[in-house]
Image 1 (cartoon, rainbow, N blue to C red):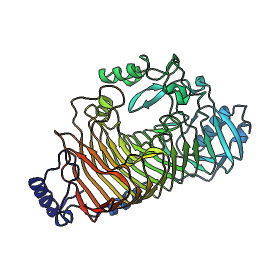
Image 2: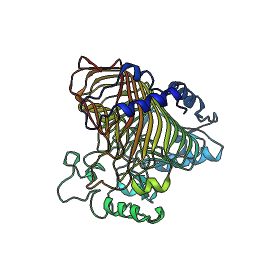
Image 3: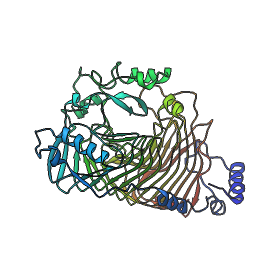
Image 4: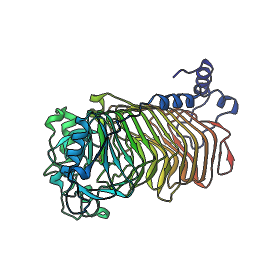
Length: 479
C-alpha cells in the first residue's frame, strides 16, 4: 500500500503542531484532514475479493442416506457421514448431500474436494457426549495451539472444501453441555464444578506456550475442560461456507486458522453461549465475509493472530480481509481485532454493514496489551449504519485485560484507522474511545463524514496522535 508524499508531509506537520495525549476532544483543521488518506483502499478491497479462489466441485452426488444415515434425532449417523465423505473424496470430489430431516452425529471431518451440502429443512445435530470427539486433534484455543477434542466440523490441511445449503448445524451446546466449562453461572456452572480456568487447563496450557513446549506435547482432551470450536478449517486452501445456519456452539463458531482463500457467504450465526464468536479468521489471508447475519454471545467477527508467544512463534499476520453487506445484532463487538493478536492484523476492509442492538457493545473494536503486542494497521470502515451500541462506536484499547496480569515487553503498534460515511443513532457511553500507550501512541486515525448521535461522552482519547476529522459531527457538534 503506497502512501503519497502529500500524505506524509501533512501527517508530519500534524505531529509537529498538535499533541492529543490525554486529550478529551482532539481537533484538527479541515485543511489537514484532506491530506490524510490512502489511495483508494476500496479498489484494493475489490481486488482481494476478485482474486479469492472459490472452490469448484464435480457434479457427482453422495447422499448420506445411501451410506446408512438415519433421519433420527436419537440414532447416530456418524459412520454414514464418514463413509459418504470418504467415498466422495476417493472419487475425486463432489457433493455429500444431507437431505431434509434431523441427523445426529459426532464430529464431521471434511476432505479435499468435498462439498457438504444441507438441503432446506435438514438439521445436523451434534452429540453432546464429549468422548465422541476423541481422539484429540491439532487445534487451538484462544490463540494457543494444542491437542484437544475435535471441532464439530474439522478439516486439516485440505483443499477445496465447502459447507453449503439452507440447512442448520446445531451444536446442541447449552447449560447442560459444554457451556458450564466456561465457569460462568449464567451458563450452567456451579461452584466447585470443573472449568476451563482450573490449574490443569488454561494456566497449564499458558505455561506450555510460554516455555515453548512443542504443540504435539500439549495434550489435553479427556479430563480437561476446553470446549471445541464449531467449524475449523486448519491450514486449508479454498474454503467456502455458504447459506447454512449455525446454532448453539460450544465455543467459537467459524474459525479458519492458517487458511487462505476463505469465503463466508449468506451464513447465519445465532448462538448466544460463552465465547460464541461468529467468525474468527486467525493467521488467515484473503478472507471474504459477505451477506451474513451475526447474533452472538460474543464478538460477531473477531480477527485473530495468536496469543502471546504462540502468535510470535507462528509469526503469521491475518490480512486482506473484506467484511461487507452483513448484519450484526447481539455481540460484544461488531468487527473486532484481537485480543489474540500477537502475529498482527493488516488490510481489513469493512463496508456497507448494519449494526443494531441494545446488546451490541461496540461497533469497531481493537484490543491488545503489552503481553499480546502485535501490529494492527490499515483498517478501513465505510458506509456503516449503527442503530445503537452500549459502550462505543470505535474503541481502541492497548490495556486489554481479562486474565490477570497482562503487562509484558511487547508494545503494540496501532496505526491507519479510517472511518468514512458512518451514521450512528445512539452512540452509547462513548462516541470514540481510544486508550493508547505513552510509549506507542495510536497513530493516523481519520473520521470522514461521520455522524454520531446520543453519545454520553463524545470523545475520550488517551495517548493518540491527533485524530483527523472531516465533516464529522458528534452530538450535534462539528469536529
